[in-house]
Image (cartoon, rainbow, N blue to C red; front, side):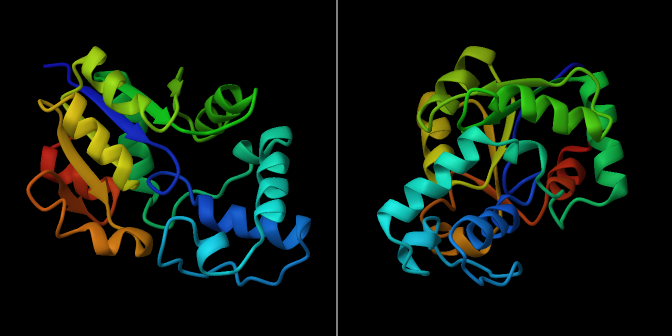
Length: 198
């Protein structure tokens, strides 16, 4: 049976934070360790004290550059999981949902996935409130994300979608609140195992 599955990119498949920190060190002349583990989502502002002006400058760089095609694969993704993901896209309807910004975000995301041998990836770029409506419209059976507001939006707009949240240092405080709405996993591979995918 073909299943409809929505998969987030950053924090689930790619290591956004590592590359964002690398960009901050380059653009803002900072010296943040690449293995820094943020405790909150907006860590640049709330933990590292980056000014709003510099934060906006950093996002301007992300929007105008090829940033999205330069991200490292997430440390929780090994060769087997990536192989399973590639196979999954040939057996099921897989949609890569992302809140990425910039005129070329969709193209660069598709290019990144293609470089990892995901054939003809279906990438949908949306704002932070769009993932729930997209899951509803697609009648998605499964969805995985690492950002709590996305999880909440999907649970409200598409209550039939079974939700997984990728565990991360920045979403720890939300585990209890989401306990009845989401299955918490350490990796995309763990979701594959629980759902017996691909």
